[in-house]
Amino acid sequence: MELAVYNLKGEDTGRKVTLSDAIFGLEVNEHVMYLDVKQYLANQRQGTHKSKQRNEVHGTTKKLKKQKGTGGARAGSMKSGVFVGGGRMFGPQPRDYSFKLNKKTKRVARLSALSSLAKDGKISVVENIAMTAPRTKDFVAILDGLKLTNGKKTMLVTGEVNKNVILSARNLQKVKVSTPIGLNTHDLLNTDTLLISEDGMASLVELYSTAE
Image 1 (cartoon, rainbow, N blue to C red):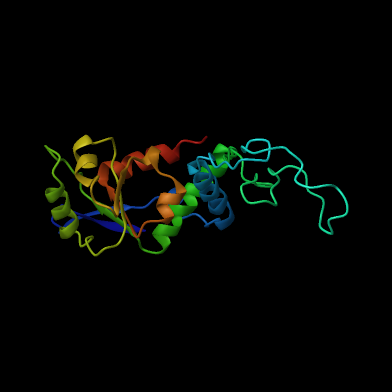
Image 2 (image 1 turned 135 degrees about the vertical axis):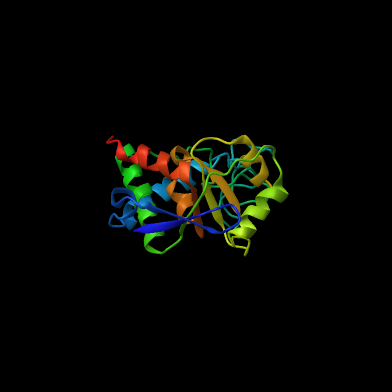
């Protein structure tokens, strides 16, 4: 598959980039992508939820009423979960939600996501973006030239970390900037357009052409 390379004004430069079948032409493995996204979301959870059990709430431990003869259920401490102000039975406790996923599995998931975007025609290639200073207005002008300011989500992939580009895009809610090594399956599947710079494409091919 060949894609045209656009300049920062959205004009066709006449150059073309051939997408590698080893990266963008693989069979999409939906189950592996599901596992990778599941792990990503699980790792975002802080797991600090906590409710007090009956041994942690403040209250008297005096027996409320005699054991028999009242016609009702027996009751001991006021801290029981059946009473207002008592502890919560089987409530949430702090825990770690993260789980392990093999590196090769995560690699297949990312490649499947890239192949899925290519199959759906959601990948565009742009010439290298060089900004001398962080300026959101200039970055929006670039997106406007590429017709990417229609309210849809855009993921920009650059060859290396460009501080000015990152700062310029930081205030844009539906724009993310990443390098090839920082890509994850969740963000790839959660974007409407994957915008890759020429140096970003070269870095992407170099990263995934090496066998793990």
